[in-house]
Length: 223
Ligand code: CTP
Ligand code: MG
Image (cartoon, rainbow, N blue to C red; front, side, top):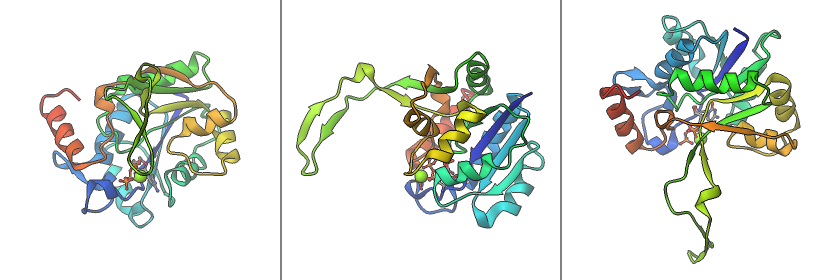
């Protein structure tokens, strides 16, 4: 349909430890990016643009050729630059744009559909969220506890994040400093960001333990 999905996949994966760009690291024998793009394609979207590590653009095109029809562009030095590069490659007819981390490799197609539908239903910006399970404290530079944050008002944020195209484009055009997600840039424009329920399987693979958890989810066909 009229939904385009941008897949930033150009990160180094420093927190995962040595072993090359994270999106190309293997999970049950396949690169994280392949798992992610297969699920994006299964959601029935009309356009997929992947931002690959600049030295891996050709390799990623080949990797995805049997998985989905995807445009592959060179990513940037930050996630934000990678998303901007991918956005520039989306044809003009796509009005709903989702931004989805390759690192959330097991995100179910149903969550992708739900975010897109919430944008279609009238929200300019939509993010999937989960409750925070840990107690969260503010801590000073010296390691002293400043206070305990009220957890009930906090949410952990996942991707895909969905936007009216003009809203995402305006946010990227206006951004001066770096943001870890696209909704953060939209908030700065004073536009309301709407939350929908996230999904445990949309966990971000960040540290080595996350690969272990993801393998277990796959093995139990929970993702
Ligand atoms: N990303 C990107 N371009 C960058 C940095 C990150 O496209 N310059 C992508 C990653 O590939 C990932 C998503 O943004 O799919 C979320 O980033 P993160 O989980 O931080 O991945 P990395 O930056 O690769 O990991 P790390 O921060 O541990 O190096
Ligand atoms: Mg990173």
